[in-house]
Length: 297
Image (cartoon, rainbow, N blue to C red; front, side):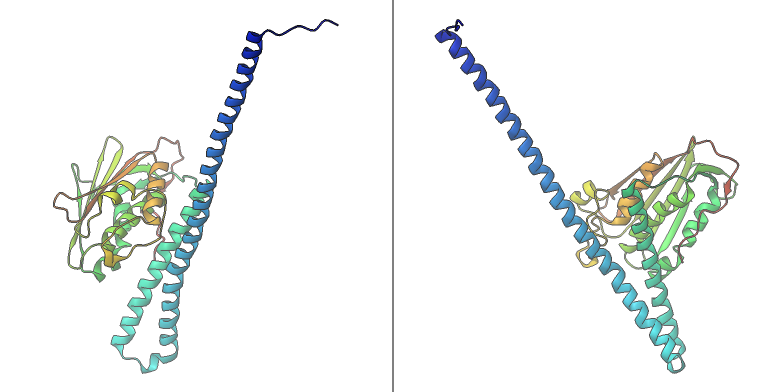
């Protein structure tokens, strides 16, 4: 059997080819290693976030639940020895703690549904006037507690005295509005005001919520609706930060094919949230929701 004699040039070419192949393999391995490192870092961050998330939820629920138990026990065991003023004070504080628990639980449950991809739209024809009135009524106690003046106005045509219907998921839209208004109430000073303007033009609902409380930093404005980091912020730091409720609101607005943005007011006092919701194009039967879904205490 004759052996083919390889010339020096052919040998060099073969060595060069194999070297390039090995070089490519090494390069591909380096890229794969970097991808695995990034994935590992994300997994570590995800686990850390989950741990912080659970820890924060535990604190947010344990603290008010403990307060509720203490106040309820005081009312149950000593009501005969309490004067009317003390009973009234305990009752108001009890209601506030229950309201806060309900608010947090609604957002926690909705966040879990969003994360699992289980959120489904329930489109009905909503009476806009009744819907707005009902949504605002659920915040009356919080407004009264801080003596805040909520100014509601219709921009353009005033539909407050007309039966105008809008196809949307009333429960999810209501949660969005309550979440953002709650944020404005929470970060407003006592005796201040909140301006809530609404317009309905060309089958599009627009909401503007302007408060005069603590403003947001530039970093917060860029990330406020981003990935959830913590359930609440420290008011003493005047930092409006990220919250689960705002993250949930953004997800629900996008589910409704809308947009939500926020900016610091021109005088650097407070913030203005802008929400745009187009009417749903989903075909439905004649199902009418007169006033939205009441789910707060």
